[in-house]
Length: 609
Image (cartoon, rainbow, N blue to C red; front, top):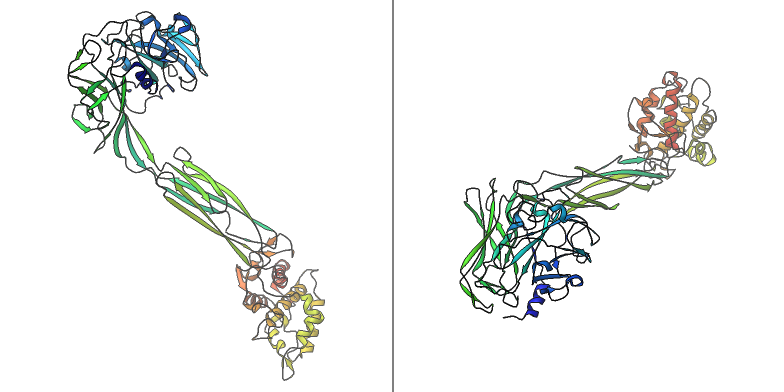
């Protein structure tokens, strides 16, 4: 037999809270239970010492030498019930199924109503205004009736009133205590069983991700470009429910003590647990840990269990735990006999709740970093937005890739979505302005051009375009130089038409095309490629040159959104008479669009399609 000191150490190291014997019947989740724990103790400052026979006096006592000396303990704030309003009641074992007044095993309502046993807790401090003794943050439980338990075991219930009265048994905390007034046991006292039960099933959620951007390409001359991204994640309705099971704890209470109030060990055959339907048909046999045989050394021993189910549950699922023990002599000083027997504890109408798998994801982005966590309770779909600002290159395009990724919290499943955007400066053509072609460098290129039988080759090439057919068919290269100078000097946008300015800009573009092509006039201007073959975006032409404003010139080119430079020269020429005196039906606005297009090419601010 263990000494009393040994038992006290074991008791003080083990929680003695008794789990409610029954859950709420019906469907859905039970209300959240009271947090923390319930305690009984003595109050030595009022009753003197020696009344706690087992436990820690003034903190948590387990065995008392009289009913009057049991107090509800305020307890340390870290362990006691949380802030709120509660009532207490003293019950006989098994009364946890209904702690309210009028219940068969309520021992307090013989003397007063629950309203006289109502108290509040705030930060571990108890406030009480009823008729029970109240001292040092403790409330005396007396008066209450005698327990029906032959071992002198009582149950203290502390129940939350947060959901009103009557209280749900799962909204209570319970603490077993024993009153031993020195009467020896004639026989051993049977064990009792209480339990809880929670039904679970799995659903796995699949997630998807998408990424969009307000524009995939930005074309502008210099400066910075901003792209606005939207990342969208969403989940499905979840897989079909699976892996149905019931889990929980079984508490076996051994009320037997010796004459010195030390707990007596009881040998048990084992603890079993079983699921049945409403017609008592067996649904599953549960695995209990430890299963037994086992020796109960403490007043209360908690066993865990799990009950896997091979099929979805019927409408009614009941869960019953049983403990059995053989006949045995208890060393209580009298050689008391504990008859062989068994005890049951049951939970009726077990409720099932979902165990969500992959219910949350972490969303990241290769550029923006951590975007956030998304769970089932969030909006579906859920969006994240962010912006990225880049420097526009001087010429051509630079691409930027962004990838958003999610990772699930349970299975680490992943998904991603990407967007590639481009920031584009003007096409790098190497074209030169009409000012260049009238200065000495440009004139040197023109007059130094190749000739055939005294006729400059550029003469023949320029005269294929109607606006330049006022150039003599036999012009020498020197004459071409003079022609170019005169056309450019005559450039003017005033008046009812813009023929002169359009002709000068188009002439400069034609010279750019001719003297950039090794197959024509040779690449005399060091262009990266023949300019005539460069495609031009006609929907976005810089105007005025170097500004941040743009226009579409499609109307001047038959509605086309893009053309090569050669195609533009041919189309504009088709709208002119010989020599460029009448152009685009003399509609100045249309002439101006064509002029702006050639001006942008000549200043290298035109964009590729």
